[in-house]
Length: 152
Image (cartoon, rainbow, N blue to C red; front, side):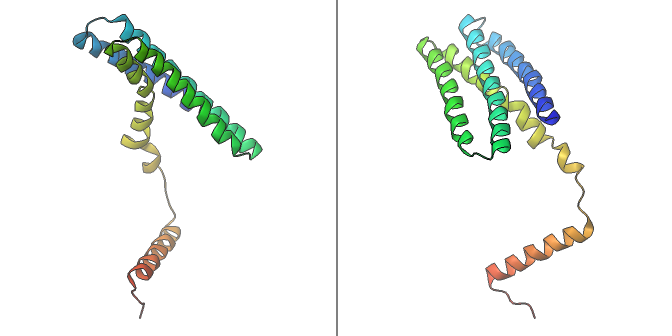
């Protein structure tokens, strides 16, 4: 569980950095708008709570083997997102819901960056040559079967 808590901490810290960048950029676009700032933070808080709930329910699901936790988790998390976004839209001016949307997406940026743009886990991963050869042979057999080729 140490890796999960480390990931949650990284997402919170780097997500907060993304929120700070969004706020600085918004100063040049809309000036200082309290609605934007409040809903940027509210969206970020909702996204963090949802991320933590996802980790919590995933652990519960793995411990108990009950797949029902997946549905419960989804419903609770989507309701949180909807409530925060609905309140932002009801404020009546565009910077509020744009800030909320930016806040909701802020924790996803570090996740995408660390797992897609800069994937350390792929560069450090080693596969034994005999296992790699076995995988390649299986892939070749599947391709041959799919295309109707026969080995001679």
